[in-house]
Length: 533
Image 1 (cartoon, helix red, strand yellow):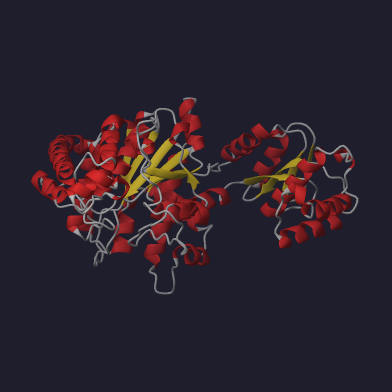
Image 2 (image 1 turned 90 degrees about the horizontal axis):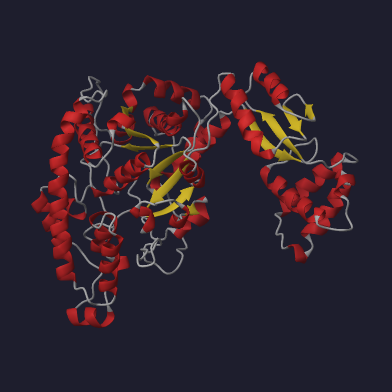
């Protein structure tokens, strides 16, 4: 972020945290009043553009507000190592300015050297939205034309439809064998009325997210809106459960859960810093006594969950005189016998084999995951890395409130006549004051203005100085809404005219892409649901 570039609030302009939990529904009309709740409730991390080399302008301006493990993708970029980016488009209508954000994010990752995949989520559109196949074909073509017109290099990336990708469907079948209905119920609220095809489309989306890693496991980022986070979390779980081995830290022969392990690591680190404790001589039953003292010591600032504390104490007491020895543990999840034997041979130094796991006492922690992954791949496993994700804010509707595809005046389609786009911006709500005099005296409210969002997320493109100038002039009362909307409307008209010219040029490019946009499938169509854009 440059010093002069303002960062729009990522909490929707609110100053307090909402009391209600956020509901993330991939198929609903999602609106989020306070984006900070996503950090608290779902563990999404706050995005820091300063940690990204040459960040995209959506990153610099706060449109991209959160992520999951994006640092692994950044490291791959910085070290010129393989990485991928993938996102999908459900063809339920015309592509619009909200979709452009995702298009731009994918194209930027491609320009940074990533392997980029754009997919048409036609199975989801048919099963979850009831779209007919003829409608899907028409919209799919339109999405791809805009994607290419905006700069996607078809020679250096991959486009596909879910329904036509047999490799993807085979992967979805394998993922489906690791999932059960209770997970769909807990994550999405599915019930007895949910059709099986809808559930199948979800499994297909999990396969989409892992698809870039089929040939080579690599850091992969999924740029999406926060309403798609349930898919990302489910895919991360699926990636882990399909691995041959789970690698964990252990301290004795018995197994700890994640919370118990974290608590014991905190205890062990504390003990190693004490002059009165020799950790090399520490026994399990001694550690149990030390643990009780540790969690009750106010100076350690450890707030242990009582059930975690009690279960850990019980395991340590049952361990008796067994020595405490930190080690790396390879738990057998799905490995065949040959892979398990090969892992034993690959682990250097002191090690111990059990029926369902292997403990290593000398292995360099940095090499642990790589050894497990190499053995897995050599024995017909996938070796998936957990997919990363970045999340962008929902654009505010031009009429105020949410932007919705069912309210034409609230959004701008990339297919809108340039004059219609001009008129929509001219009619848009603003964050201005009631009168021009009040605006000059108090300044406008760009953080609450749909028109300023157009500048920040689309019309200013990579011109940070222009975006900053609009923000500051508005906030200081120098810019009045009438002139601001006129300028934005002119820029929107120019953008749409230029984009639609490039779409015409993209038609010839799309003709050479190996993707079938005239499906002969038969099926039931239905009423399209409203969605936020």
